[in-house]
Amino acid sequence: MTELKNAIWQKLKEVNYPGYNRDIVSFGLVQRVAACDGVATVDLDVGPLEPEARREIEEAVRAALQDVPGLEKLKIGTAPAVEVRPRLLRQTPDRPSRPPGVKRVLAVGSGKGGVGKSTVTVNLAVALAQQGLAVGLMDADAYGPNIPRMMGVGRLPKPTQGKITPALAYGVRLVSIGFMVTQDTPLAWRGPMTDKMVRQFLHDVVWGELDVLLVDLPPSTGDIPIALTKYSRVDGAILVVTPQTVALDDARKAIGMFRRLQVPILGVVENMSYFVCDQCGTRHDLFGQGGGQQLADHADIPLLGEVPLEPSVREGGDRGRPAVLQAGSAAGDAFRTLAERLARRLQLAP
Image 1 (cartoon, one colour):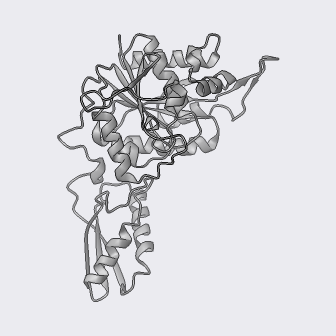
Image 2 (image 1 turned 135 degrees about the horizontal axis):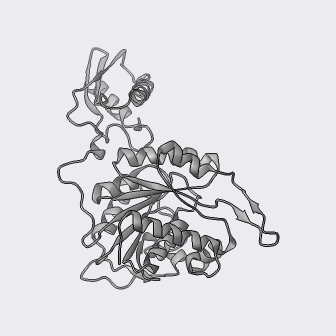
Image 3 (image 1 turned 180 degrees about the horizontal axis):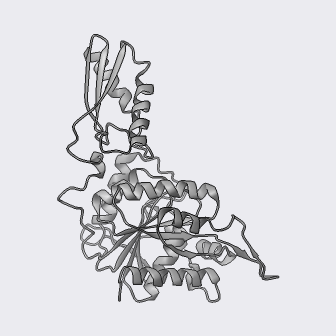
């Protein structure tokens, strides 16, 4: 029966935890697999989960194992749980610490690509630096590292005593994998490599004394956000959305992820909220209206700001000069207001 047992274990590694790109075995949900005479028992640590999540996992397990050769009958049991969350999400007595000298760590995410997370992160970082704060920016998007171009920096300084020295632009210290590969090089990385990148950017960079470190997350609710909370205390998350329903659907998944990771959600930023015609002054809601407020109300979190769609934001990102630096930019004004609200909320002071 060893072959049957091994086959079951392998199949269980193909069952993802709901909402994550990580399987239930690596999450620690599978406590025991036993097999004898074609009858198998799989004990799952799902007791503390919501009924819907338990049902979803059990159905996925049955579907994955239904064609395993030699398996005639399957029993799924609930193992006694020592912890109330999957292994990678547990809060241990040794709670992760922030990087040395960093007072606050803030994650910027959405669950969806193309909503402007990097644009918001870059402009927010520069706006906070304009207030006299010591700001760091960690580009955690291994697959689309756009921060170097958006901040107008091409390379990192020489290492300091074997550690990475962050680049400096507009008063912001920044690190990105984009400094270490050519623009045409795709990073076809799996979880262990992104895990290593996050750990290195947090603890092998000479950040110095920072009031706040902003972390630009990639799309999805997978390995990189989990690694961030694994290697650092995260003081809060900002959700970036556009008004359209598709963006809100993914943002709800991101809310669920941050709450499972026990990261406080500071609020919602609605990017590309509206467009004002420079000829007639008419406001146009190109992507819908009120989506950010709808999400904030649904999740019982504040709407931190609405950033209009304007050419200066795109131009600033392409030229490496964020919109918040440009006089007369309505988007820049919105980013400055957002930075002021966050600074007050987190009691940040230069």
